[in-house]
Length: 390
Image (cartoon, rainbow, N blue to C red):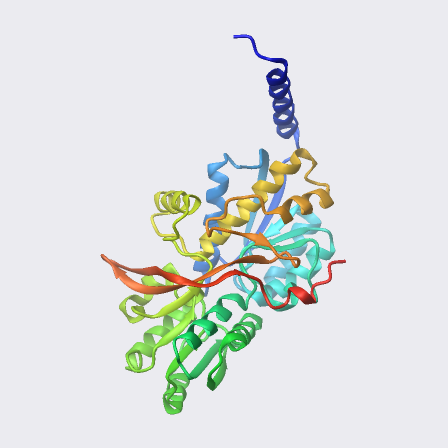
């Protein structure tokens, strides 16, 4: 069959692009995340989501080979800072990602982005980095810390709860959480308590909130903190009389497996749910379950989307990915099909996205989340106007 000159030229151009990418130096991606100790399940999910996208693409992103360096920070600030310094100075990574916790993010991200390294956050979204300390080299593919809490503040108000007790850990994300909830909640605050990060016993807090007699409790306690609090709350006999509300961080799939029936009927807000009805998510859930034998949490989806974002940028710039200006412009376009549905970046390079409400239900032998409805559509964080990119 005779090919037209136009088709021959297109094939030749595609071959040149493939050859150029094949000859390109592998991109170095450094992942600092929590793989041991308290909260390890969050980092494991982020890592597994990211690595799934790599496996699907034969260890390439956008046709560029990837050298992946993954290091456990143990949820310790000093560890994260030392690892980041080593990745920048010795390993000379092109991109960094992976941090779970906001206090670690604040210790690492400002310095590495100032040094010229691009950072893609698959989780932590401190208000300062979304606002006054935003940076052209910093992109957040998850959310700004306040977002899911803002949605629950709106939902609880809409449901007519007028006296809510608030609990969160005493670190940047905890403070952002309660600030976000109060931004949209219109009722009375019965109490506002900040617990120790990593706390395991909540008997005193539960006794205090019982004495205040609120009509609902909103709590943000991610990882093992949420497991302990939810179990102890149910054991105290308060679950039926004072309903619990929280963000997805306190009700992700790993937590629900550990908490079990104590979490049933609680409501939580999330930008992601494994039962979202879009083709990208259906394919992701099926592949994740086939590969890892569990349903993906929002953390896994964020790791996966971080890789997809990078895939889109590498595809756009090819072997020219070390040109920071071009690569940042490609990232800002967010030209990928997110598993959460519609996704785009705001002016501070944080997501503009829908936020949903989910109910914890029993499904056969497991306890899981079920999508109930949408609280916000195309929601932007409250700090975007404070961001002045230099």
